[in-house]
Image 1 (cartoon, rainbow, N blue to C red):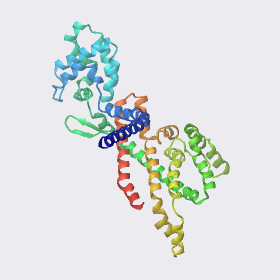
Image 2 (image 1 turned 30 degrees about the vertical axis):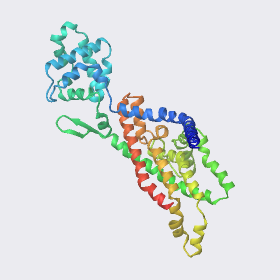
Image 3 (image 1 turned 60 degrees about the vertical axis):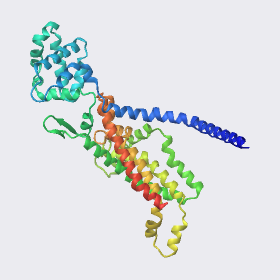
Image 4 (image 1 turned 90 degrees about the vertical axis):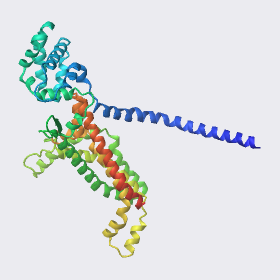
Length: 409
């Protein structure tokens, strides 16, 4: 009897293992998709934001020589001679343009300096480099006599660096002063502008979506479902089509300006397209369903008898709504606000098409560095900071709003 019980226990254990294995096999495609489509790109972005071996691979001996330099005055003549030899070799291999591009990011204006110096050094014969290499380099441009340039080359030659994060925060490292603010503040202002626009869009979606959701929740189910189809209709329309429609509406000779001019309300057309106003209006229209759906799902589950009971006990409509009904809708409102805000912060297509220079967001600058300037490391640093900001916002939501929703529930 005892052996039979043990046998049955073994069979039950094997059956449980088979069930777990079957469940794992069903979930495995989803796990692989998440790994390849989300985890791997994010890990690659984080890695590229701190790993930059290009300069150290192009001029390895120079970078090694600069490690002995005290970062004051010019490097010694041996270091300059090594750099002249390596720049001469790059010019012969037609790879000096890569170095010019990299050093131009580290010190503005170095692209033309490196290219012209490479051409002059390229005319020398290898046996002439020992005697004429350093003088030719220093005569090629006055920048080679500036310690700031060599400090920038030394920093650019670091295989692992946090300089791109400093740039993304409008900071720079100085040999004497340490980390200090940059002369031109670009990225922090753009982050602030992105957060401001995302907050405005979220507030507008809440102001428009709350009464609409309340109205839908108060209707009979068949009518509510019919109107909900109209709310979901933008999801079935191409994002590019919707954005292009706003271009037709907001442009100088568009529908809105033409109507206002024809009615006599305006003497000249308004400049609405390619502004922050256009970005806010178009993105509010596109993201409004993300606010309505969570609100409607929560409001639909609220028993209307609570509000009727408060009114029957003598409470006025607005105070009763504020004290009884509104707190019960906070889970849907907070979930919709979180969705709209996070999507707004990382939105790219709509600001690029209707925002112009005034309505650009940080995502547009990240795309610029990846597609145009080819500065993937800075784009990765900007994207990593944006990811950290979104995770921080989610933590704040989960820590405070989520906890209060659980208490309300």
